[in-house]
Image (cartoon, rainbow, N blue to C red; front, side, top):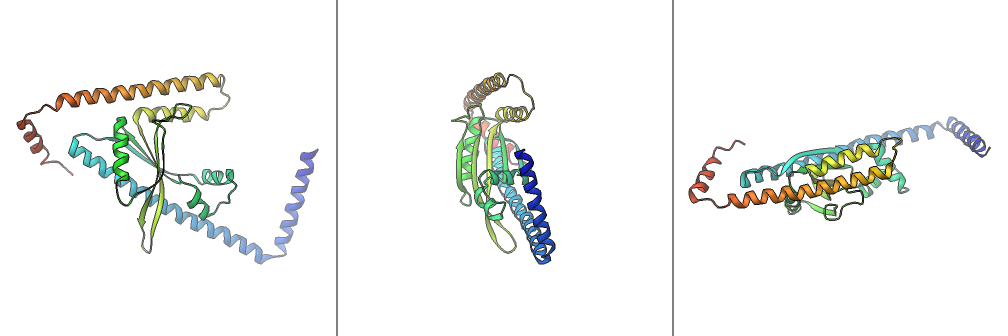
Length: 257
């Protein structure tokens, strides 16, 4: 009965508002113009976030190229980018009791622009992160290390919120970008966990959570072992003669760019 009363009240209020709008065409125009203006400005803001993603992605690509030449290995296996869906942005603001405005998006939503960097080894994560943060045009806003302090479900990754200046035709804007850096194994686990989390009608959910956590621990142990193996191999290869070093330098002369 209460639901029916609420429905009737809503319908009556909607009818009154529609009647009021019919009697006030100027108000209809103003509201329509406001919505259109917001949509246009929002698309422009997304364009700016997309440009910020390009700026940060280029920085990681440059670092990967440098590591390839200096250390003969690529620390970055893959780079993925994304813009947050509008619905997700709106939902995030609504959960915090905020309206969907450009000011609120720029001020309170840190992950509109996102970059995920996939590395081969754990130490690569921190080397790449430190190299990025050492650049004088990058400002660190927030840092969460879920590798040293994993989430209760086993999730591991290094999260950085950074600001990067983007130069447009008529202005320079400092844009926020969320950077997630993780190993191939961490990314494999996180992708599957994300898929399973949204499955409907899951039976024995507690058991599945326990198994996922156990898998995360195994993956973390494997990451540590693989890093140890690589370090042992590198330690053996360090004992090179001067002739070996000279031949290695000569081999880099014809490096294709």
